[in-house]
Length: 71
Image 1 (cartoon, rainbow, N blue to C red):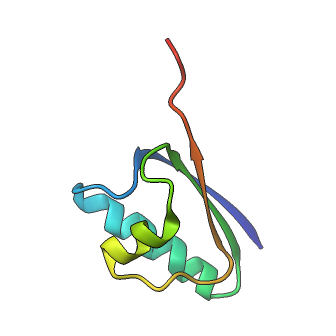
Image 2: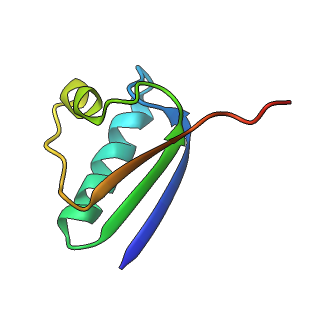
């Protein structure tokens, strides 16, 4: 199954819900799904993000960074 998981936050973050979001996305990917986590543009290096949270990323978890819309 392909899961597109959009979130309204940037990674890494000190907000408590970001660890839950990343762990959930990683667990879904580890269970055999292809997960695309779409998030605000923040730290664009996934290795730094996963290291910050102490998570070993599943191969089928993909991070996509998008800039916030101009207003």
